[in-house]
Amino acid sequence: MLHAVILAGGSGTRFWPSSRRDRPKQLLSLAGSATLLEQTYERIAGLSESAVVVTSEDLAPGVREQLPEVELLLEPERRDTAAAIGLAAGVLSARDPEAVLVATPADHVVRPASRFQRALREAAALAQESGAIVTFGIPPQSPHTGYGYIERGAERRHEGRLSANEVVRFREKPDQKTAAGYLEAGTFLWNSGVFVATGKTFMGELARSLPDHHSAIQRIVAAWGSPDQERVLREEYGKVEKISIDYGVMERAERVLVLEVDYEWSDVGSWAAIPPLHEADEEGNVALDAPVVTLDSRDCLVQGDGRLVTLIGLEGLVVVQTRDATLICPRERAEEVKQLVVRLEERGLDDYV
Image (cartoon, rainbow, N blue to C red; front, side, top):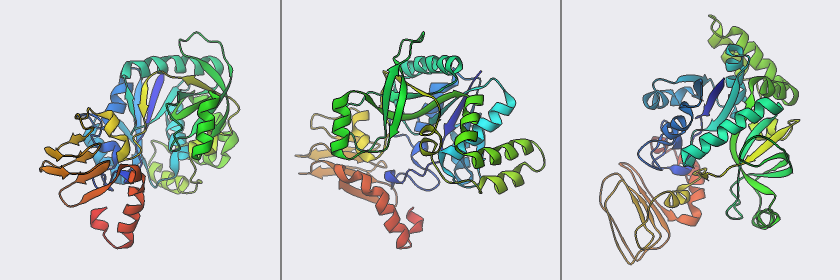
């Protein structure tokens, strides 16, 4: 049976001031009326036997508000995605020894959902057949330096519609020259961060690559459902190394296959990623949640709180207005909002974070 693991513990500081500590990116409606978390669940719910959301204790109220019917696995502290997926894989594999797991971030945009679902069906079948971890690769549209890359090797024959290849290696976010080389080579795909494998495969790779993680999770699973569950979870989870699934497992795994998928995808990495997800006016301006009047202004994004926003003679700006804070920056510097949040914390302005 297919079981979904939705990773929803991120802080999303690049979307300040809309994103706050208790309401990060995945809980916001940035690409439609539903939140990114709700959209992620809707994509998977019809295909999976069950779903769990892995998140932090402080985000649990917001997640429960949006997905009251879904089980939460609460991290006592953030230990990155290897621990988060490992915890879910351990718990779900104990319940269903034949489980096939799909682990996916809660904060990506995928369109149309039907193509993602077809890809997921193929990936689940391929994972069972091959015993490999199967990941989704996005055909690159530009030499993007903000994404990780997957170098694909030999093609694997299978029954599916999508091209499946052996993974040669994972490459971290490159500089501009390297990214241009990847695009020209034609053998690289963007890393979507979606992984599909049987529970046995994933736990086996965890034991081989991160044995301390595996041992800790085994002790947690042994206590699951007992009066000692919370105590053991807190004791063991806090001991494991803070490391991502990419570094900790995928780059060391014995066998990984990549499916080249055909859906539109965005990791919604900063405010600069929002305009392509919405319809713009004839000057290229995108207005969300606010009336906007412009004069000689183009290629601006305005995210409001219902109050009128007016622009004169501006180009390529991000303007975000909330009840207690306003952000204005060039679109090409939207990634730096994360650094701005650090500056706010350094100045003791925690009420705005």
